Length: 322
Image 1: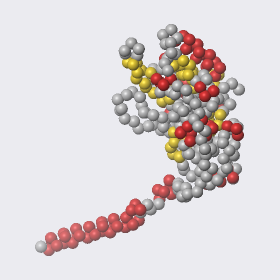
Image 2: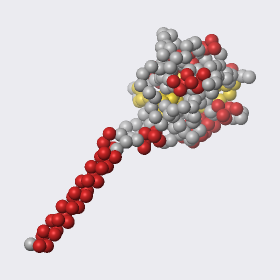
Image 3: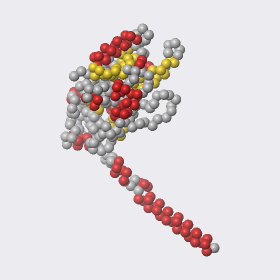
Image 4: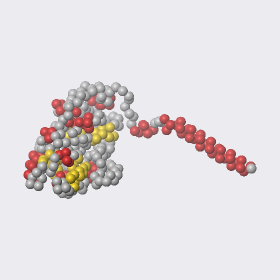
């Protein structure tokens, strides 16, 4: 099975952001409330509700003019993916097609993928943001989100939704070897007018599955020039929440999920987290009496209302007698 890749040609992108909309529509992600910040770029950053966005970079041209550079910001689906290596619950795996898959069911919201991603892509937020990305195991909690490479579309032989909707052909999809060849050809064609043209992602982190045709240095586009794994982090084996330990012990979550290879991961000893109890579900919280929001306050309010009405009635009676 050949690995797949997306090729993004920055010279063909017109920043229409159709890819942003297509991603939202396919995954039924909620809209993000934004404001006018003096730029056409919106929303300002990736989030749990926004997995793909076009970033606007305003820079000076060599002839003294101002030019816009448009960059696709989303998961790069690295071959040597830091998020896979540092995930203690095996919530991330490398799929045979090359992309990095995230299983929110296994995620404990530790944030290590956020901390160690050289592209600053994953985002943490509450579970069940989309009806298509649901979490059933145990308590409501914070989980990590990022581009899913439209894995369900790939399973049906289709291209990702962002590629499907791109009107200019700035996004292409296919076997990675073909995308590398196409990207190299495009760079060669740009060399005369853009001597710094470069195929970003061919070799970075042993090969990215989202590659870019750039006309300038990566950092000009907001990308790291040399993305790499950071210091391999220690992991406290006492940071597993109770629900995860019980889920693995009860075999509702396997220790190694499908498509996983044990050598990709750390080998933690599962131990419950010491500390305060886990939060209750939102439904129970909504019905709980929390401080002055409970029956005590309601009772005092009722007494106050009755007292005020009694005073008004007495005052009217006194005025009538006068």
